Amino acid sequence: MSSSSKRHIGGKEFCLVALIAAWLLSQAVATVPEAAPTAQAVMWLGTQSSMVEQTALRGRIAFVSERNGNPEIYLMEANGSNVRRLTRNNARDDSPVWSPNGQQIAFVSERDRNRELYLMNANGGALMRLTRNSARDEWPTWSPNGELIAFVSDRDGVPQIYTIRATGGGLRRLTQTETPETQPAWSPDGKQIAFVSERDGNPEIYIMNADGSDVRRLTDDPAVDRSPRWSPDGKRLLFVSERDSARLQIFSMTSSGEDIKLIAATDAEGLRNFDPTWSPDGAWIAFTTDRDGNLEIYAVRADGSGLRNLTRSRADDYSPSWAIAAALAPSGRPTATPTPLGGGRQIGMRWRAP
Image 1 (cartoon, rainbow, N blue to C red):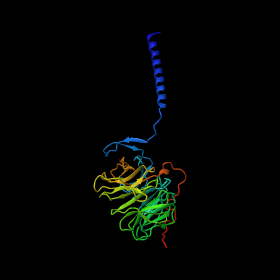
Image 2: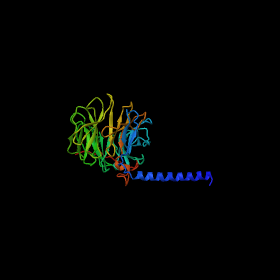
Image 3: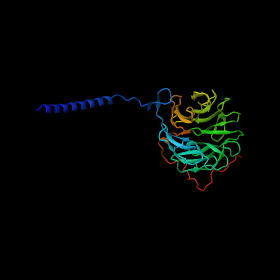
Image 4: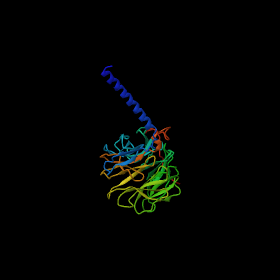
C-alpha cells in the first residue's frame, strides 16, 4: 500500500474517532440535570450605571406618542420592539386601555371636537364611538368580564364616575358628590373600583364597591395622591404621589391602604414618574417619566430594580397600558363586538340618578 493511501485511511480513522468522541460527549452532557429555567437575560441599560439581570418582558403595550407630530395611539412589544401606529387623524387620541381579552382597546379621542370614548380592535380597525355628549368623557377602565367600562364625565356639572356597556348604552352614575371623582380602576375580581376623590378637600385614593356603595378612604396625606392601578392578583395598588419630596413618584400599597412602598423614584427635584401600569404577571411596572428631558416609557421590576427605557424616542411617549394575560394568547370571540363607526345608533344616552 502506498504512503499516500495510508495517509488517506489514517485521515478517515481520525475523523471517525472524532465523531464518536463528540457523540459520547453530547450524551454525557444530556445526562446532566437541567437547572430550572429562569427566563433571564443580561442587557445593557444605556443611561443606567450598570448591567442588570432582567426577567423577560412579555406581552404588548399600547401607548400614546407624538412622534408624528400629533398625539396618536401606538402599539409595541413589551420590550420596546415592533412599534406600529394604530390611529391616524388630526385630532388628539389618548388614554388607551386594553380589554380583558386583549382584542380591543378603549381610548379617548377629540376627533369629533369633544373628548369622547371610543373602541377599536387591537390592530386599529373596527372603530366604534361609545359616548355622545357635549361634556368631557375620559379615563376609561374595563370591568374584568369585559361587559362594562367605567369612566369620568362632567356631563352633570362636576366630574363623576359612570359606567356604560362595552356595546353601548346602559349609562349609570356611580358617585354622587359635589367634588371631582376621577381616575377609576376596576379590581381584578370585579367587585371594587379604586378612584381619586377630593371629597375631603385633597385628592386622595378611595375604594368603593362596583355599584358605587361602601366608599372607603385608603390614603391620607397632604400631598396629592392619584392614578391608582390594581396588581393582577388584586393584593396591591400602585399610585402616584409627591408625599416624600417635591418629585412625582410611584408608590404601592395593600388594597387596604397599608404597607406603602416607594417603587419608582426620581433622582432630581422636579422630575416626574407617573402613568403606571402592571405587567400581566405582576413582575414589572411600565410608567411615564421625563428623566431624559422628554416623556419616555420605562419599565421597572415590581421591587424597584431593573430600570430600563422602552421607547427611546425624541418625541413624547406616554400613557402606557400593558395587555393583560389573556392577550398573550388570544382565543375565543371578543367580549364586545364593535359596530363600525357610523352604524346609525346613538349610544351613551344621558342618565341621572333619581
